Each structure stands twice: as structure tokens, then as C-alpha cells.
Image 1 (cartoon, rainbow, N blue to C red):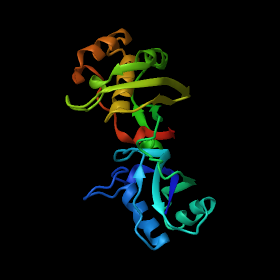
Image 2 (cartoon, rainbow, N blue to C red):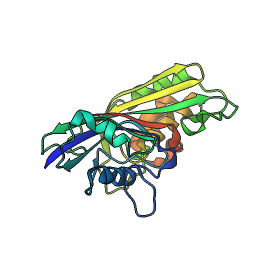
Image 3 (tube, one colour):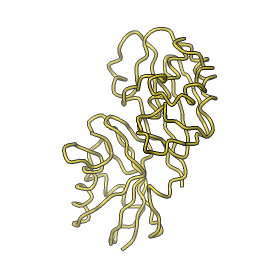
Image 4 (cartoon, rainbow, N blue to C red):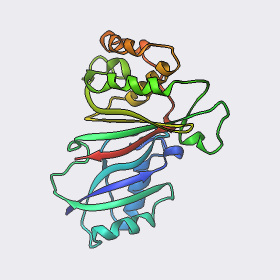
Length: 243
């Protein structure tokens, strides 16, 4: 029995997230069924973490154990023959039996995509969050500095009081290309809805609803109502998991 690491890309539009669940159509369920057909035996995938309904991935990572004669470099092509077009295995690697896709992850990088327009987009509606009206992207970019470092992100997540909400972000930055804006966040871990709430708060800064100097006080308050309203899922992408 050998362990294999997969790098996976998917369009999450039609799915109820990564993680298997009783009443949902998930990436994990579809992949396990498809790969079980390929290998003619049950496949159980362990992902680096869950992504929510509608969230996309360029670099989700999962591992599984299997006895097979298929060489790793041939696995992506073989697997993709059994997978729907909105899920693709980009890379397969044979790894140590001790490798764990979730517990060995050192950092994750997410990107949240925005488009700035008062006219809805037929193409981008499932792949970016629309921001109506004027927004100062330069102020949003400047406010990113307040999220870098180790903080208690309770006010910027949907976690309960019982859970550890301290995380470290090593990079939070913004790039703009015309009406398209990308917010990149890289850190050692992310709480439930954390990325979407942080980006919502940055938008509030850009629209003048709050001052960027208010952000440290929001951290200290641990009051979820003081941060931005959680954004929708379609703009969120898991870009990379590092080990």
C-alpha cells in the first residue's frame, strides 16, 4: 500500500464544497466515486481542508492510499478521464506513508476576486464578487497591513468562543487590473469565513464606512458585528497549500 498526494483544481459553482456531507453534492464525494471506479476498489481522500459551497480551487491538496501499478505521472490523465470537466487532477506524487494533507500543511494562500461595476456581469457572476459604487482601492491596500502578523481573528470569523481563534498571516495584499481586484491572503491557517469577512472589512474601508485605524480596535473588541458583513463564496479561491 502506497500513499499518493494529489493537487486538484476545481470550479466549485455546482458543488456544496469540498467535504463529504450526507445531503450535498461535494468535490470529495464525486472524486471518491470516480477514482473508486478507476481503481476498482474504494478510495478515501483526505483533503488539506474544507472549502465551502461555491468556493473554487487552483491548488487543493489531498492524499489517498492505494495498491496500484499506475505510475504517479500517469495518474492525472487516467483520473481526469473519470472526472467531470469542472474537477481536474493537476499532479500526482508518491509520498511518505506519514504524509498527511491536512496536518502537515504549513501555510495556505487564498485569493478573493472582486469586480468593480454597477452593471452585473454575465460571465463573472460565478467567479468574482461584484462591488457597486465608488471604492478607494488604494485605501483598501493600505489597510491590509493591519491584518499581517499574529492576531486573534475572532471578530473576523464565524467561530465559537470554545475554539482557538489566533492565526498568523504573513501576507495580505491587493492588486488591481482595471475593474478587477484581487485580495491575496497567505497564512498558517484560516478560520471559518475568515477570508470573506476580512475582504468585506477592507471594502468597508474603501467605501469610507469605517476608518482603517478602527481595525485594531475591532480585533480587541472580539465583536463580530463591528467587522464587515461576510461576502459571498463565488469570489474565493484556494490557490496553494505549502508543506
